[in-house]
Amino acid sequence: VQLQASGGGLVQAGDSLRLSCAASGRTFSSYTMGWFRQAPGKERRFVAVISWSGGGFTRYADSVKGRFTISRDNTKNTVYLQMNSLKPEDTAVYYCAAAVPIPYRSAAYPEKYHTWGQGTLVTVSS
Image 1 (cartoon, rainbow, N blue to C red):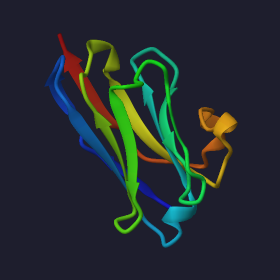
Image 2 (spheres, rainbow, N blue to C red; image 1 turned 90 degrees about the vertical axis):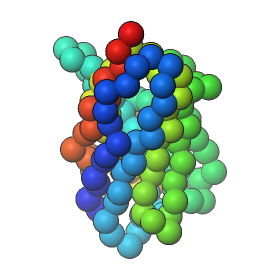
Image 3 (cartoon, rainbow, N blue to C red; image 1 turned 90 degrees about the horizontal axis):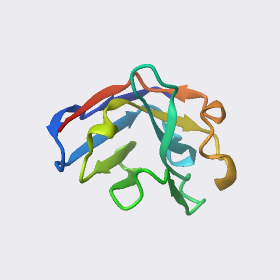
Image 4 (cartoon, rainbow, N blue to C red; image 1 turned 45 degrees about the vertical axis):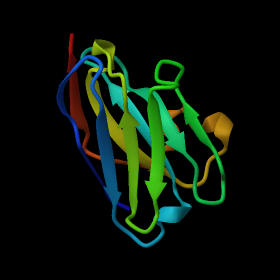
């Protein structure tokens, strides 16, 4: 699978953005899909994950709960990250990633993901 992230940009605090991650391949529905982000000078951190189609879970970092929503459209081989009420501390490069089915307890660990997109920059001004 190959991943292509898009949708980043420069917004003001309180605004919304929707990131998209388009995947190639015919087995997209079988992958667990995650979003991670990396701020300048910091390590890559978990943002959100959605399970493969049969897994039935989503999971969010505490810092984005209630503001971000992850979803997927298997007919379009795309996973989305709807980001509302953006804050300056959300500024980062956002990466989507794919993993073979992994359990909820492991879904926040970047090392569990085998394929990464190129990243899309989100900048939130105050």
